[in-house]
Image (cartoon, rainbow, N blue to C red; front, side):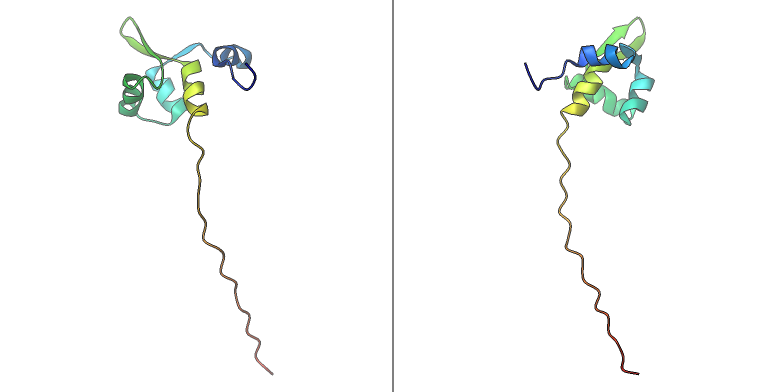
Length: 88
């Protein structure tokens, strides 16, 4: 099982809470409550109900972030600045 991360174990190793309330999860993921619920509905992250509270399992946030696609950018080549020297 080399190359695979046990996110549940990582949560414990890092001393993170096992779950967090939805407001904390939104802050940690930098998303709003609507996007958080969309991610839960799509099965991207693990949301649970604890009484009236919605809690998100921290390991699922780590797993989600680890599986996001790598950002790729195409940068245009820098234009060389031509230096013109005037004869004195």
